[in-house]
Length: 320
Image (cartoon, rainbow, N blue to C red; front, top):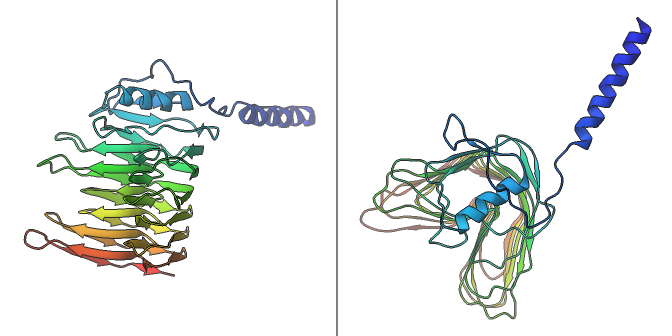
């Protein structure tokens, strides 16, 4: 019996070692899969088993495939190896319109420079008339820094920009996502006079639901002539619901010029036009500071269009 127990213990140790040694290898920075398992339906989603599979999505969207109405499910932790990640849907004419489910697995060692107008793991999404696209259950870890872009920059570590299609009642959904990406952007001396919009989860939205998302990374912007909007979770949120979201990272902006600067612990700025927006049950634990600008524990600035707007609803929020 003792020999049997000893054998069982040894076997258990060997199996546990096998699990460790078969963990995902780091991505080489270029390779994409030739195809994906699954059918892309809700019952049989496309399976994202590796960094190469994730790169497949980026390559296809860049080639013009929107994946409208298609479902994706991650089935393992993914290591992007600290290699430069080209965002999914970088051009406005090439959006991602699918539903990506991280399924509780991680995407680690994400790295991207600020070389894109729309930056992030995903950079551009739009709504669909008959389908609710979204990013759900994703855990993203890494950093963003450097880059040589001198124009506008809209970078959310998870998603850069999303936009409602005309007369579409559906909202894009970002839900149950955890983002721990340190963002450091210094563009002093580069002559940028446009917009710089940065946040851990989402940079700029339009008609979006953001639920149960957490920002852990520090967001830092240094500029000398740009308009800056930064948020721990969402930077600029027009007609957007931000509910049950938490920020732990610091949000900092510095500038030597008298420009519009807004730093919010959860949301940088809000705006409402035709649709009501809500910020409910949100908490900020991070330090928020803005040299020569405006800072808010939850929201730095609120704007409201006259006439058709149904207004803001901000309640149950706390900053520590």
